[in-house]
View 1 (cartoon, rainbow, N blue to C red):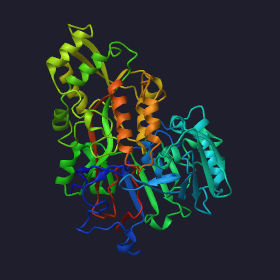
View 2: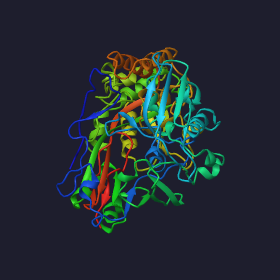
View 3: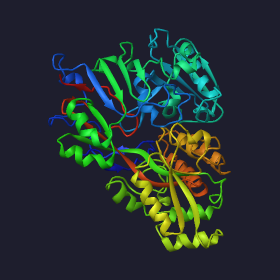
View 4: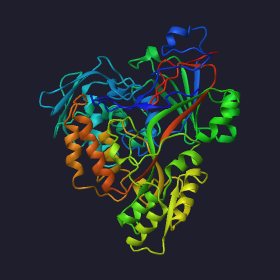
Length: 515
Protein backbone atom coordinates (compact mmCIF):
# COMPACT_ATOMS: atom_id res chain seq x y z
CA UNK A 1 0.00 0.00 0.00
CA UNK A 2 1.31 3.44 -0.86
CA UNK A 3 0.55 6.26 1.55
CA UNK A 4 1.34 9.94 1.23
CA UNK A 5 2.18 10.01 -2.48
CA UNK A 6 1.14 13.61 -2.89
CA UNK A 7 1.47 16.80 -0.92
CA UNK A 8 -0.87 19.71 -0.78
CA UNK A 9 0.10 23.31 -0.38
CA UNK A 10 0.30 24.97 3.00
CA UNK A 11 -2.39 27.62 3.37
CA UNK A 12 -1.98 31.34 3.79
CA UNK A 13 -1.61 30.80 7.49
CA UNK A 14 1.99 30.07 6.57
CA UNK A 15 2.46 26.84 8.45
CA UNK A 16 6.06 25.77 7.99
CA UNK A 17 5.10 22.19 7.25
CA UNK A 18 4.63 19.75 4.43
CA UNK A 19 1.09 18.41 4.49
CA UNK A 20 0.38 14.93 3.20
CA UNK A 21 -2.67 14.24 1.09
CA UNK A 22 -4.97 11.79 2.72
CA UNK A 23 -5.04 10.43 6.22
CA UNK A 24 -2.27 11.66 8.47
CA UNK A 25 -2.07 8.50 10.50
CA UNK A 26 -2.63 4.95 9.32
CA UNK A 27 -1.63 1.40 10.06
CA UNK A 28 -1.55 -0.82 7.00
CA UNK A 29 -1.75 -4.26 8.57
CA UNK A 30 -4.61 -6.68 8.11
CA UNK A 31 -6.88 -3.99 6.71
CA UNK A 32 -7.19 -2.28 10.10
CA UNK A 33 -6.15 1.31 10.71
CA UNK A 34 -5.40 2.75 14.11
CA UNK A 35 -3.03 5.36 15.49
CA UNK A 36 -3.81 4.26 19.04
CA UNK A 37 -2.02 1.00 19.72
CA UNK A 38 -3.52 0.78 23.20
CA UNK A 39 -6.99 0.56 21.70
CA UNK A 40 -6.24 -2.64 19.80
CA UNK A 41 -3.26 -4.20 21.50
CA UNK A 42 -4.35 -6.07 24.58
CA UNK A 43 -1.42 -7.03 26.76
CA UNK A 44 -1.83 -10.71 25.91
CA UNK A 45 -1.53 -10.02 22.17
CA UNK A 46 1.61 -7.93 22.21
CA UNK A 47 5.15 -9.05 21.64
CA UNK A 48 7.91 -7.36 23.60
CA UNK A 49 10.51 -6.60 20.89
CA UNK A 50 10.63 -4.48 17.73
CA UNK A 51 13.61 -4.61 15.37
CA UNK A 52 14.07 -1.67 13.01
CA UNK A 53 16.33 -1.72 9.96
CA UNK A 54 17.69 1.82 9.72
CA UNK A 55 21.10 3.47 9.80
CA UNK A 56 23.06 3.50 13.05
CA UNK A 57 24.02 7.02 14.10
CA UNK A 58 27.46 8.45 13.36
CA UNK A 59 27.52 9.42 17.05
CA UNK A 60 25.07 9.29 19.94
CA UNK A 61 25.83 12.93 20.75
CA UNK A 62 23.31 15.26 19.06
CA UNK A 63 25.60 18.26 19.51
CA UNK A 64 28.45 16.81 17.44
CA UNK A 65 26.40 14.79 14.94
CA UNK A 66 27.17 15.96 11.41
CA UNK A 67 24.76 13.58 9.66
CA UNK A 68 21.20 14.75 9.17
CA UNK A 69 19.78 11.22 9.17
CA UNK A 70 21.16 10.64 12.69
CA UNK A 71 18.13 12.45 14.12
CA UNK A 72 15.89 9.40 13.65
CA UNK A 73 18.08 7.13 15.78
CA UNK A 74 18.87 9.87 18.28
CA UNK A 75 15.14 10.43 18.83
CA UNK A 76 14.95 6.93 20.28
CA UNK A 77 17.09 8.00 23.27
CA UNK A 78 16.65 11.77 23.47
CA UNK A 79 13.55 13.88 23.81
CA UNK A 80 13.75 17.43 22.53
CA UNK A 81 12.29 20.59 24.02
CA UNK A 82 9.53 20.30 21.42
CA UNK A 83 8.43 17.63 18.95
CA UNK A 84 7.06 17.74 15.42
CA UNK A 85 3.92 15.82 14.58
CA UNK A 86 3.30 13.71 11.46
CA UNK A 87 2.75 16.86 9.40
CA UNK A 88 5.86 18.62 10.71
CA UNK A 89 4.12 21.09 13.02
CA UNK A 90 5.72 21.96 16.35
CA UNK A 91 4.04 20.42 19.38
CA UNK A 92 4.94 19.88 23.07
CA UNK A 93 7.87 17.66 24.02
CA UNK A 94 9.84 18.20 27.21
CA UNK A 95 8.08 21.56 27.26
CA UNK A 96 4.33 21.30 27.63
CA UNK A 97 3.90 24.83 26.26
CA UNK A 98 5.80 28.01 25.35
CA UNK A 99 5.16 31.73 25.43
CA UNK A 100 6.67 34.50 23.30
CA UNK A 101 7.22 37.98 24.67
CA UNK A 102 5.08 40.64 23.01
CA UNK A 103 8.08 42.00 21.12
CA UNK A 104 9.11 38.52 19.91
CA UNK A 105 12.60 38.94 21.37
CA UNK A 106 12.33 36.11 23.89
CA UNK A 107 10.48 32.83 24.26
CA UNK A 108 9.87 30.91 27.50
CA UNK A 109 9.43 27.15 27.43
CA UNK A 110 7.41 25.70 30.28
CA UNK A 111 8.79 22.23 31.07
CA UNK A 112 6.76 19.33 32.34
CA UNK A 113 7.31 18.90 36.09
CA UNK A 114 9.16 15.87 37.46
CA UNK A 115 11.23 15.02 34.36
CA UNK A 116 14.36 12.88 34.78
CA UNK A 117 17.16 11.64 32.54
CA UNK A 118 17.73 7.93 32.02
CA UNK A 119 20.58 8.07 34.57
CA UNK A 120 18.10 9.23 37.22
CA UNK A 121 19.31 12.83 37.38
CA UNK A 122 16.87 15.72 37.33
CA UNK A 123 15.83 17.22 34.01
CA UNK A 124 14.85 20.72 35.00
CA UNK A 125 15.28 24.22 33.63
CA UNK A 126 18.94 24.29 34.66
CA UNK A 127 19.61 21.07 32.73
CA UNK A 128 17.89 22.39 29.60
CA UNK A 129 19.84 25.63 29.90
CA UNK A 130 23.11 23.68 30.16
CA UNK A 131 22.21 21.47 27.21
CA UNK A 132 21.33 24.36 24.90
CA UNK A 133 24.38 26.35 25.98
CA UNK A 134 26.60 23.37 25.17
CA UNK A 135 25.06 23.25 21.71
CA UNK A 136 25.78 26.94 21.29
CA UNK A 137 29.35 27.07 22.62
CA UNK A 138 31.02 23.65 22.32
CA UNK A 139 33.97 23.95 19.92
CA UNK A 140 32.94 20.83 18.00
CA UNK A 141 29.23 21.66 17.92
CA UNK A 142 27.52 21.21 14.56
CA UNK A 143 24.31 22.88 15.76
CA UNK A 144 25.84 26.18 16.93
CA UNK A 145 24.97 27.98 13.66
CA UNK A 146 21.30 27.21 14.28
CA UNK A 147 21.46 28.96 17.66
CA UNK A 148 22.99 32.23 16.46
CA UNK A 149 19.89 34.25 17.31
CA UNK A 150 20.01 33.03 20.93
CA UNK A 151 21.88 35.69 22.90
CA UNK A 152 21.57 34.09 26.32
CA UNK A 153 19.51 31.50 28.17
CA UNK A 154 18.07 31.78 31.65
CA UNK A 155 16.53 29.21 33.99
CA UNK A 156 13.60 31.02 35.58
CA UNK A 157 12.70 28.62 38.34
CA UNK A 158 12.55 24.84 38.13
CA UNK A 159 10.48 24.48 34.96
CA UNK A 160 10.77 27.71 32.94
CA UNK A 161 13.60 28.24 30.44
CA UNK A 162 13.82 31.51 28.54
CA UNK A 163 15.76 32.04 25.33
CA UNK A 164 16.67 35.71 24.97
CA UNK A 165 17.13 36.52 21.29
CA UNK A 166 19.25 38.95 19.31
CA UNK A 167 16.32 39.48 16.96
CA UNK A 168 12.71 38.47 16.60
CA UNK A 169 12.71 34.76 15.76
CA UNK A 170 9.48 32.78 15.64
CA UNK A 171 11.24 29.69 14.28
CA UNK A 172 12.54 28.61 17.71
CA UNK A 173 9.80 26.04 18.55
CA UNK A 174 10.43 24.27 15.23
CA UNK A 175 14.19 24.56 15.66
CA UNK A 176 14.16 22.88 19.06
CA UNK A 177 12.22 19.82 17.85
CA UNK A 178 15.28 18.17 16.28
CA UNK A 179 18.91 17.60 17.22
CA UNK A 180 19.28 21.27 18.19
CA UNK A 181 16.73 20.82 20.98
CA UNK A 182 17.59 17.29 22.13
CA UNK A 183 18.72 17.56 25.74
CA UNK A 184 21.69 15.57 27.03
CA UNK A 185 22.27 14.89 30.73
CA UNK A 186 24.77 17.55 31.92
CA UNK A 187 26.59 14.85 33.90
CA UNK A 188 27.05 12.69 30.80
CA UNK A 189 28.08 15.68 28.68
CA UNK A 190 31.22 16.08 30.81
CA UNK A 191 32.71 13.09 28.95
CA UNK A 192 32.00 13.65 25.22
CA UNK A 193 33.94 10.56 24.17
CA UNK A 194 31.79 8.32 26.36
CA UNK A 195 28.63 10.17 25.31
CA UNK A 196 29.35 9.38 21.66
CA UNK A 197 28.76 5.66 22.38
CA UNK A 198 26.59 5.78 25.51
CA UNK A 199 23.81 8.39 25.34
CA UNK A 200 22.02 9.68 28.42
CA UNK A 201 18.78 11.41 27.54
CA UNK A 202 15.09 11.39 28.39
CA UNK A 203 13.67 9.76 25.28
CA UNK A 204 11.36 6.77 24.88
CA UNK A 205 14.19 4.21 25.12
CA UNK A 206 17.49 3.67 26.95
CA UNK A 207 20.53 2.29 25.13
CA UNK A 208 21.75 -0.89 26.83
CA UNK A 209 24.31 -2.34 24.40
CA UNK A 210 25.92 -0.93 21.30
CA UNK A 211 28.20 -2.52 18.73
CA UNK A 212 29.23 0.18 16.21
CA UNK A 213 28.37 -0.85 12.67
CA UNK A 214 26.35 -3.81 13.90
CA UNK A 215 23.52 -3.23 16.36
CA UNK A 216 22.07 -1.12 19.14
CA UNK A 217 19.84 -2.74 21.77
CA UNK A 218 17.50 -0.51 23.74
CA UNK A 219 14.85 -0.93 26.43
CA UNK A 220 11.72 1.08 27.16
CA UNK A 221 12.33 4.12 29.37
CA UNK A 222 9.67 4.07 32.12
CA UNK A 223 10.53 7.68 33.00
CA UNK A 224 9.77 9.01 29.49
CA UNK A 225 7.02 11.59 29.85
CA UNK A 226 4.85 9.75 27.28
CA UNK A 227 5.84 6.21 28.32
CA UNK A 228 2.24 4.96 28.17
CA UNK A 229 2.44 5.26 24.37
CA UNK A 230 5.60 3.13 24.11
CA UNK A 231 4.15 -0.36 23.60
CA UNK A 232 7.30 -2.46 23.15
CA UNK A 233 9.74 -3.30 25.94
CA UNK A 234 12.79 -3.93 23.78
CA UNK A 235 13.90 -2.09 20.66
CA UNK A 236 16.69 -3.27 18.36
CA UNK A 237 18.28 -0.97 15.78
CA UNK A 238 20.25 -2.59 12.96
CA UNK A 239 21.66 -1.22 9.71
CA UNK A 240 19.26 -1.36 6.78
CA UNK A 241 19.40 -4.79 5.14
CA UNK A 242 21.26 -5.27 1.90
CA UNK A 243 18.86 -5.49 -1.07
CA UNK A 244 19.72 -9.14 -1.56
CA UNK A 245 18.62 -10.09 1.95
CA UNK A 246 15.78 -7.66 2.67
CA UNK A 247 13.00 -10.18 1.99
CA UNK A 248 14.83 -12.95 3.83
CA UNK A 249 15.34 -10.67 6.83
CA UNK A 250 11.64 -9.87 6.99
CA UNK A 251 10.66 -13.51 6.43
CA UNK A 252 12.94 -14.75 9.21
CA UNK A 253 11.93 -12.07 11.68
CA UNK A 254 15.41 -10.54 11.71
CA UNK A 255 13.65 -7.24 10.96
CA UNK A 256 10.13 -6.18 11.90
CA UNK A 257 10.40 -2.85 10.08
CA UNK A 258 13.04 -2.18 7.41
CA UNK A 259 13.95 0.96 5.53
CA UNK A 260 14.17 0.28 1.80
CA UNK A 261 15.48 1.91 -1.33
CA UNK A 262 13.24 2.41 -4.36
CA UNK A 263 14.93 -0.50 -6.09
CA UNK A 264 13.82 -2.91 -3.34
CA UNK A 265 10.15 -2.01 -3.21
CA UNK A 266 8.91 -4.25 -6.03
CA UNK A 267 10.62 -7.37 -4.73
CA UNK A 268 9.48 -6.83 -1.16
CA UNK A 269 5.87 -6.19 -2.20
CA UNK A 270 5.96 -9.27 -4.45
CA UNK A 271 6.97 -11.30 -1.40
CA UNK A 272 3.77 -10.19 0.32
CA UNK A 273 5.09 -7.58 2.77
CA UNK A 274 3.32 -4.24 3.19
CA UNK A 275 5.43 -1.25 2.13
CA UNK A 276 4.68 2.25 3.38
CA UNK A 277 5.80 4.98 0.95
CA UNK A 278 5.84 8.47 2.45
CA UNK A 279 6.78 11.67 0.68
CA UNK A 280 9.24 13.32 3.05
CA UNK A 281 11.19 16.56 3.19
CA UNK A 282 14.70 15.45 2.07
CA UNK A 283 15.94 16.04 -1.48
CA UNK A 284 18.87 14.67 -3.50
CA UNK A 285 21.47 17.32 -4.26
CA UNK A 286 24.92 17.89 -5.68
CA UNK A 287 27.18 19.62 -3.15
CA UNK A 288 29.57 22.00 -4.92
CA UNK A 289 32.60 23.83 -3.55
CA UNK A 290 32.68 27.05 -5.55
CA UNK A 291 36.17 27.96 -4.35
CA UNK A 292 37.65 25.08 -6.38
CA UNK A 293 38.14 25.12 -10.17
CA UNK A 294 36.20 24.72 -12.40
CA UNK A 295 33.26 25.22 -10.02
CA UNK A 296 34.42 28.74 -9.15
CA UNK A 297 32.79 29.98 -12.35
CA UNK A 298 29.00 30.27 -11.88
CA UNK A 299 28.35 29.37 -15.52
CA UNK A 300 30.06 26.00 -15.03
CA UNK A 301 27.67 25.22 -12.18
CA UNK A 302 24.75 26.46 -14.27
CA UNK A 303 25.92 24.23 -17.13
CA UNK A 304 25.91 21.24 -14.76
CA UNK A 305 22.37 22.01 -13.64
CA UNK A 306 21.22 22.54 -17.24
CA UNK A 307 22.83 19.29 -18.44
CA UNK A 308 20.89 17.22 -15.92
CA UNK A 309 17.58 15.70 -16.95
CA UNK A 310 15.88 15.51 -13.58
CA UNK A 311 12.79 13.73 -14.84
CA UNK A 312 15.00 10.99 -16.27
CA UNK A 313 16.67 10.65 -12.87
CA UNK A 314 13.28 10.18 -11.26
CA UNK A 315 12.12 7.69 -13.87
CA UNK A 316 15.23 5.61 -14.50
CA UNK A 317 17.33 5.89 -11.36
CA UNK A 318 14.60 6.30 -8.75
CA UNK A 319 11.92 3.99 -10.21
CA UNK A 320 9.47 6.83 -10.78
CA UNK A 321 9.38 8.02 -7.16
CA UNK A 322 9.90 11.69 -6.34
CA UNK A 323 9.52 14.97 -8.20
CA UNK A 324 12.20 17.10 -9.95
CA UNK A 325 13.30 20.11 -7.91
CA UNK A 326 15.62 23.09 -8.38
CA UNK A 327 15.50 24.09 -4.72
CA UNK A 328 15.80 22.39 -1.32
CA UNK A 329 12.07 22.32 -0.57
CA UNK A 330 9.33 20.20 -2.21
CA UNK A 331 6.10 21.59 -3.59
CA UNK A 332 3.56 22.17 -0.85
CA UNK A 333 6.16 23.23 1.71
CA UNK A 334 5.88 26.80 2.89
CA UNK A 335 9.47 27.69 1.87
CA UNK A 336 9.08 26.29 -1.66
CA UNK A 337 9.29 29.18 -4.14
CA UNK A 338 7.26 28.45 -7.33
CA UNK A 339 9.41 30.94 -9.26
CA UNK A 340 12.29 28.47 -9.05
CA UNK A 341 10.42 25.55 -10.62
CA UNK A 342 12.25 24.50 -13.80
CA UNK A 343 14.92 27.11 -13.06
CA UNK A 344 17.44 25.42 -15.38
CA UNK A 345 15.51 23.35 -17.94
CA UNK A 346 17.33 20.36 -19.38
CA UNK A 347 19.14 21.55 -22.52
CA UNK A 348 22.39 19.93 -23.63
CA UNK A 349 23.15 22.60 -26.25
CA UNK A 350 22.61 25.37 -23.68
CA UNK A 351 24.91 23.58 -21.23
CA UNK A 352 27.67 23.49 -23.87
CA UNK A 353 27.21 27.21 -24.59
CA UNK A 354 27.49 28.00 -20.88
CA UNK A 355 30.74 26.03 -20.70
CA UNK A 356 32.14 27.97 -23.64
CA UNK A 357 31.13 31.27 -22.02
CA UNK A 358 32.93 30.14 -18.87
CA UNK A 359 36.14 29.57 -20.83
CA UNK A 360 35.78 25.84 -21.51
CA UNK A 361 34.82 25.59 -25.21
CA UNK A 362 36.26 22.08 -25.43
CA UNK A 363 34.48 20.85 -22.33
CA UNK A 364 35.77 20.28 -18.81
CA UNK A 365 36.86 17.37 -16.63
CA UNK A 366 35.28 16.87 -13.19
CA UNK A 367 35.19 14.16 -10.56
CA UNK A 368 31.89 13.31 -8.86
CA UNK A 369 32.13 11.70 -5.42
CA UNK A 370 29.52 9.15 -4.39
CA UNK A 371 28.58 7.83 -0.98
CA UNK A 372 28.38 4.28 -2.35
CA UNK A 373 29.56 2.68 -5.58
CA UNK A 374 26.19 1.25 -6.60
CA UNK A 375 24.19 4.49 -6.52
CA UNK A 376 22.30 4.45 -9.86
CA UNK A 377 21.71 8.19 -9.67
CA UNK A 378 25.47 8.80 -9.89
CA UNK A 379 25.87 6.67 -12.98
CA UNK A 380 23.00 8.40 -14.79
CA UNK A 381 24.28 11.86 -13.86
CA UNK A 382 27.68 10.85 -15.25
CA UNK A 383 26.07 9.92 -18.58
CA UNK A 384 24.09 13.17 -18.73
CA UNK A 385 27.07 15.38 -17.91
CA UNK A 386 29.32 13.55 -20.36
CA UNK A 387 26.78 14.25 -23.13
CA UNK A 388 27.18 17.98 -22.48
CA UNK A 389 30.98 17.94 -22.52
CA UNK A 390 31.32 17.79 -18.74
CA UNK A 391 33.57 14.74 -18.69
CA UNK A 392 32.78 13.08 -15.39
CA UNK A 393 34.61 10.36 -13.53
CA UNK A 394 33.07 8.73 -10.48
CA UNK A 395 34.85 8.08 -7.20
CA UNK A 396 33.60 6.62 -3.94
CA UNK A 397 34.24 8.68 -0.83
CA UNK A 398 36.69 7.15 1.61
CA UNK A 399 34.71 5.48 4.43
CA UNK A 400 34.83 7.47 7.64
CA UNK A 401 35.75 10.73 5.93
CA UNK A 402 33.12 13.34 6.72
CA UNK A 403 33.18 15.66 3.73
CA UNK A 404 31.16 18.30 5.57
CA UNK A 405 34.15 18.69 7.89
CA UNK A 406 37.13 17.83 5.65
CA UNK A 407 35.76 19.23 2.37
CA UNK A 408 38.03 16.78 0.59
CA UNK A 409 35.62 16.32 -2.31
CA UNK A 410 34.44 19.51 -4.08
CA UNK A 411 31.67 17.83 -6.10
CA UNK A 412 29.49 15.29 -4.29
CA UNK A 413 26.21 13.47 -4.87
CA UNK A 414 24.43 13.91 -1.59
CA UNK A 415 21.05 14.04 0.12
CA UNK A 416 19.85 17.00 2.12
CA UNK A 417 17.94 15.65 5.10
CA UNK A 418 15.64 18.52 5.87
CA UNK A 419 15.73 20.34 9.17
CA UNK A 420 12.65 20.98 11.25
CA UNK A 421 12.76 24.74 10.60
CA UNK A 422 13.06 26.08 7.03
CA UNK A 423 15.31 28.85 8.31
CA UNK A 424 17.56 26.21 9.85
CA UNK A 425 17.59 24.39 6.51
CA UNK A 426 18.74 27.56 4.75
CA UNK A 427 21.51 28.01 7.31
CA UNK A 428 22.74 24.41 6.96
CA UNK A 429 22.82 24.66 3.17
CA UNK A 430 23.83 28.25 2.57
CA UNK A 431 25.04 29.87 5.81
CA UNK A 432 28.72 30.81 6.02
CA UNK A 433 29.22 28.02 8.58
CA UNK A 434 26.64 25.66 7.11
CA UNK A 435 27.68 22.01 7.03
CA UNK A 436 26.65 21.59 3.39
CA UNK A 437 28.14 24.90 2.26
CA UNK A 438 31.50 23.56 1.08
CA UNK A 439 32.69 26.98 -0.12
CA UNK A 440 31.84 28.67 3.22
CA UNK A 441 30.57 31.85 1.56
CA UNK A 442 27.06 33.21 1.63
CA UNK A 443 25.10 35.78 -0.43
CA UNK A 444 25.25 39.24 1.10
CA UNK A 445 21.47 39.61 1.00
CA UNK A 446 20.67 36.23 2.57
CA UNK A 447 21.14 36.97 6.30
CA UNK A 448 18.77 39.92 6.08
CA UNK A 449 16.20 37.91 4.17
CA UNK A 450 16.39 35.08 6.70
CA UNK A 451 16.02 37.54 9.57
CA UNK A 452 12.93 39.05 7.97
CA UNK A 453 11.38 35.62 7.55
CA UNK A 454 12.18 34.69 11.15
CA UNK A 455 10.47 37.87 12.29
CA UNK A 456 7.07 36.64 11.14
CA UNK A 457 4.98 34.35 13.36
CA UNK A 458 4.31 31.10 11.52
CA UNK A 459 0.63 32.00 11.27
CA UNK A 460 1.33 35.46 9.78
CA UNK A 461 -0.06 35.66 6.20
CA UNK A 462 3.13 37.53 5.23
CA UNK A 463 5.39 34.68 6.36
CA UNK A 464 5.24 32.46 3.22
CA UNK A 465 6.34 35.28 0.91
CA UNK A 466 9.17 36.21 3.25
CA UNK A 467 10.61 32.70 3.58
CA UNK A 468 10.18 32.06 -0.15
CA UNK A 469 12.15 35.22 -0.94
CA UNK A 470 14.99 33.96 1.25
CA UNK A 471 14.89 30.67 -0.66
CA UNK A 472 15.13 32.51 -3.98
CA UNK A 473 18.13 34.58 -2.88
CA UNK A 474 19.94 31.47 -1.68
CA UNK A 475 19.23 29.24 -4.66
CA UNK A 476 20.02 31.83 -7.33
CA UNK A 477 23.32 32.81 -5.74
CA UNK A 478 24.71 29.52 -4.42
CA UNK A 479 26.20 26.54 -6.31
CA UNK A 480 24.15 23.66 -4.86
CA UNK A 481 22.40 21.68 -7.62
CA UNK A 482 19.10 20.19 -6.40
CA UNK A 483 17.75 17.13 -8.19
CA UNK A 484 14.55 15.47 -6.92
CA UNK A 485 12.50 14.82 -3.81
CA UNK A 486 12.93 11.73 -1.66
CA UNK A 487 10.34 9.09 -0.82
CA UNK A 488 10.83 7.06 2.36
CA UNK A 489 10.01 3.37 2.07
CA UNK A 490 9.39 1.15 5.09
CA UNK A 491 8.52 -2.53 4.73
CA UNK A 492 7.16 -4.31 7.75
CA UNK A 493 5.94 -7.61 9.03
CA UNK A 494 2.15 -8.08 9.02
CA UNK A 495 2.51 -8.43 12.79
CA UNK A 496 3.50 -4.77 13.17
CA UNK A 497 0.66 -2.39 13.98
CA UNK A 498 0.32 1.35 14.52
CA UNK A 499 3.00 2.64 12.16
CA UNK A 500 2.38 6.21 11.10
CA UNK A 501 3.67 8.18 8.14
CA UNK A 502 5.92 11.01 9.30
CA UNK A 503 7.17 13.65 6.86
CA UNK A 504 10.14 14.28 9.12
CA UNK A 505 11.37 12.49 12.25
CA UNK A 506 10.26 8.87 12.58
CA UNK A 507 8.70 8.05 15.94
CA UNK A 508 7.30 4.85 17.46
CA UNK A 509 4.60 5.93 19.88
CA UNK A 510 1.62 3.62 19.48
CA UNK A 511 3.55 0.97 17.54
CA UNK A 512 3.23 -2.64 18.69
CA UNK A 513 4.05 -6.15 17.49
CA UNK A 514 1.93 -9.26 17.73
CA UNK A 515 3.38 -12.26 19.50
